Image (cartoon, rainbow, N blue to C red; front, side, top):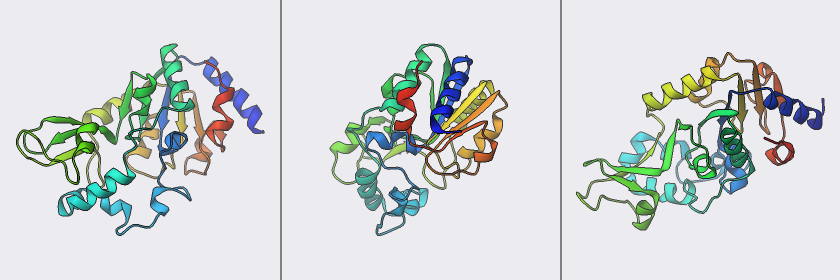
Length: 243
């Protein structure tokens, strides 16, 4: 089956569903100018003073906060990024009452920016930050406005992004809502994720609906489980789909 035939099959699946859930990873945001992590040109393939997995870890944040923020501000934050055709399509499908929500590994906030209302960001968001001492909330603009390590303007405490770093657990409330959403789906569409990061990838085990659709440029460990597998880029798929 060629890509055109697979797109037609995907459209038929979408047309016959009223409870679609999307599960998205970093590949969804590359067309918005945000690099992914594990592809050939991804963040983890670049050379840094420390491995990126170490820099964005819990212990590194506290052991070398200055180096953490230097990397974080240069490589993890893209304030000018805009939603692309994938984010916009999902939002339109939700507005039409066909998509019941999105579970995302992404921390860029682009699903919400596109207009999606039910979004569970299981790895957090760069748009939300808090003071470690007094708990006050800060925006991304607040963090970027300070050179180096940002501190609370009320108590002077360290500001930490509300993102899940390596060595940190997922937020239990968000995780449970994501699981409940996936369990409610009759179609689960997985987009732009390598499905090797746990516990996020393990969420697929909670899906027991009608069709599992997997769209990713590269192979994943779940390819054989998909009812429909499209190994292609999103710009070869989403322009041909309608709500």
